[in-house]
Length: 112
Image (cartoon, rainbow, N blue to C red; front, top):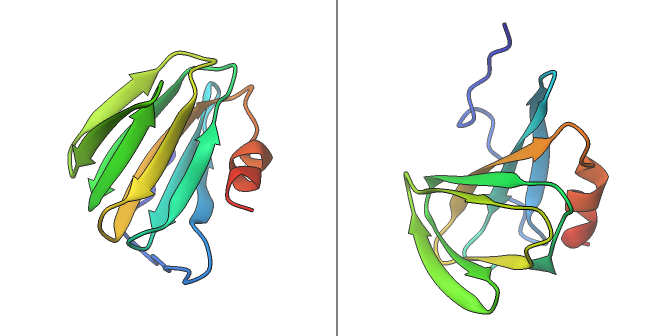
């Protein structure tokens, strides 16, 4: 069993979105993304499916040039190869579930 608390030890970064690995399982990587209001993850995509959950705050989630306002509690799943972007409307904490085959470095490169 693996366990963590996504709300513990949150550190907002004034310069860029903060990304940390919560843990990995046999099939997934669980990532925490912490946004200050106004921070953006520019348009990007992965060839693998992802799941995004808003744990705190609110995010404008752009998919195929359509913006969806996601708030605390919303969960969305995207198939692979779907362009998307995230803009924090409030300070926000987001859980991202990646395929084990996907790379955390890829996600970190989006915010550079």
